[in-house]
Image (cartoon, rainbow, N blue to C red; front, side):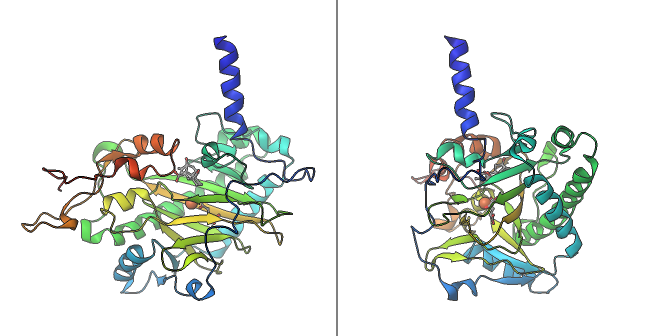
Length: 351
Ligand SMILES: C=C1C[C@]23C[C@@]1(O)CC[C@H]2[C@@]12CCC[C@@](C)(C(=O)O1)[C@H]2[C@@H]3C(=O)O
Ligand SMILES: O=C(O)CCC(=O)C(=O)O
Ligand SMILES: [Fe+2]
């Protein structure tokens, strides 16, 4: 009985990990949230998403303002040469173009983080995502060896180099955003910020209006840095503008605020609600680098300690570690509501 239960549980988990068979045209499973619903695209608003030159003396001020009013922005002059992106695109495509059986050799284990599979959020949606991903933390050597037993090093070198670049860039951007909060937290004995790289692939879709690549979500990170190939799909939800498209722009990167920075800023910075739509016009690739706190570092709202009281002097969320928060989010995408402080807390969480 117990063994049967375990088998059943494992197959239920695998259903949410194994991506669709994109080449099979026998079926057109609907996604949970077709992209045509839930808002209109605004051409004007697309141009309003702030573009910030990281070399500008105004960068710090503009970054803070963008975090407050958009939760997402575009950065230029980030210092990463275009051939680095070209290299990752080539190797990502080399992987995603393999027959399904080849990719399955790198399948993410149930409950695991790294490897090939549908985005983890699929586990709490009823229907499928038109998405496949490859997640890595540092070297992907274990998975690459399974996929290319004789030629695994090239993929590893490319991905490790990209993560190094993203780590430096994300810490620079986060350091600027948090300057007013005393800079990047030291994370005590927990080590530095944690980095996760997610390669996203959205193959050409025969029925793009029926499917979604990634359903609306916020990221758990402090910040996420996204590179997109030349196929559009990323959309941001903005209270005033609805869903707006964030088209790829050569030489620029998209950065969004995640839940951890939203909590730490006591809701001053918006955690961007975003999604990825799919297209009939080409195979879309995106690379998302999630920069977050170490799993066991307690993130708490930084609240100003001054005599006057008011909404900004009261913590809006209770302290939480990323590990605990992700556990909650695996069951409920709206995990923020579970740590929200609804009543005035007498002692407050002040720093
Ligand atoms: C570090 C991570 C963040 C992420 C879960 C993951 O372990 C790797 C994939 C990430 C991603 C990408 C798509 C949306 C998202 C909600 C998901 O299901 O997988 C995020 C996760 C997150 O930010 O919590
Ligand atoms: O594909 C994209 O542009 C978005 C990817 C994303 O939101 C994610 O990986 O969390
Ligand atoms: Fe995301």
